[in-house]
Image (cartoon, rainbow, N blue to C red; front, side, top):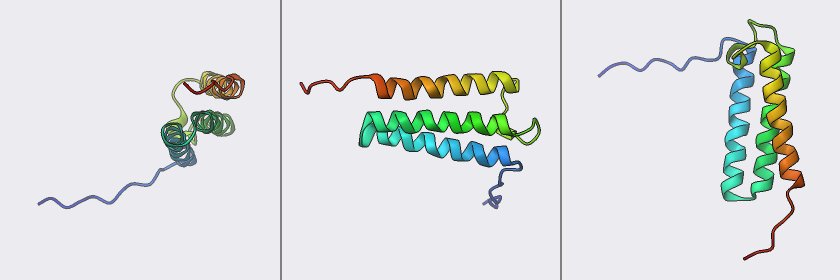
Length: 98
């Protein structure tokens, strides 16, 4: 038997924000499948906007796992996808039941 290592905590505030964004995205996916697709997509889009805000506000070192490319690219992609998902969730009309 090998001894288990203790879980590591994120070493930067960006890592904490990343985990919050990940938890919000998972919540959105659960809402999509179990409750209401529109609410789930809104939560998923909001989690992307939260990630964009975190990436924008933090410096290069502090952004941790939120840092993928340059700051401008990361913020632009996360913001675009978040706004697009929220726009689609709001603008798609309800369909009559089959």
